[in-house]
Image 1 (spheres, rainbow, N blue to C red):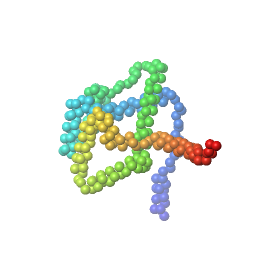
Image 2 (image 1 turned 180 degrees about the vertical axis):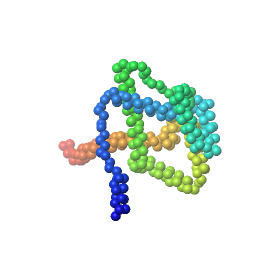
Image 3 (image 1 turned 90 degrees about the horizontal axis):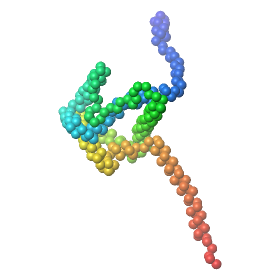
Image 4 (image 1 turned 90 degrees about the vertical axis):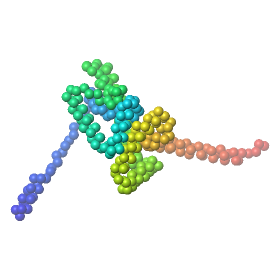
Length: 269
């Protein structure tokens, strides 16, 4: 009985009673909304700068720099150093961030022609400048949210078999990758994937960028992603299909009446 009472007391001490947490909603404020939009734009700037550098590398804007990166990448794939090289780049990036926080001025762009945009306004802007800045930030935030929503909706429609002819390609590809991963060693698979990604990024993307007609015809990933529909596109297609069917149902009775009246026209006596 004593042991049971002690266990019961210990259980009551450990029992967690969650408190009712009431979240307070902030009132709508245009100034706070403008600040939040500026924060979002400023925080998204490094991601945009990273993708800008990648596009500059793939388009061979600086031939010497891109050729050096291409040779280094192929060497890391050949000697199976891809993962250690990625980890080394992450360590170098954190080291550069540490030196930048200590006051060092280190250029962040890999390509010399690509520079990171600075702040729009410095000092004390007036009301008109603040209005233009808020309007510009709202437009950029709206575009950013729209692009993010399009990406998420395309991934959702891909996984939910909205377009079966597109999802079946991913389905068959996953089965092939699964079978190859069970049969072939991972080192050989990593070498094949790394070489194909390097050739696609450094050579094929350059050819497709120079010739847009070739990209529309032979670029399978680009055509696959562009053909994936969003919810808005599906809604528009559904509305157009319904409107066309309604037009057809409206025109069919009129056509029958005309044919019926033509078949029983009296002779011209």
